[in-house]
Image: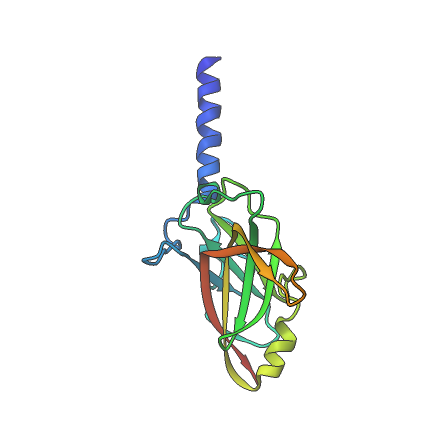
Length: 182
């Protein structure tokens, strides 16, 4: 029975590690920020080889991403006043910031629904690409933690003072692709 229990613990430890590890596709930059890969198909955990990865999309195609963190999410010490955020930039202009529930503590990667997936994070994506204009548009996606670092006093002209919350964004993954609008 002890051998079976030890086997099951080892099995579940390996399975959990599989969620956090992708040896071929995880790349971190010199600042320990992970990368994001993109496809017109859902990129399931460990199934990167079964989809065609892309960095150029035609407007109207489905766009999925898989973000890789430099370490498992719990190692970023997410606090109860912190927020997990995703940012969308088109041609270097911030289009939308989305706050959502953070990933599970043992995750080292996550699926991102960008456009045409049925669960898109970025409701402003399509309209902003249309406004950006014909031709090629560079799309950047960044996700991370809005880390609560304290408060500061903000004085008003009427003599009152209010506390302002201060946050610092900690990037944990980023990537970019081109979208072509014909």
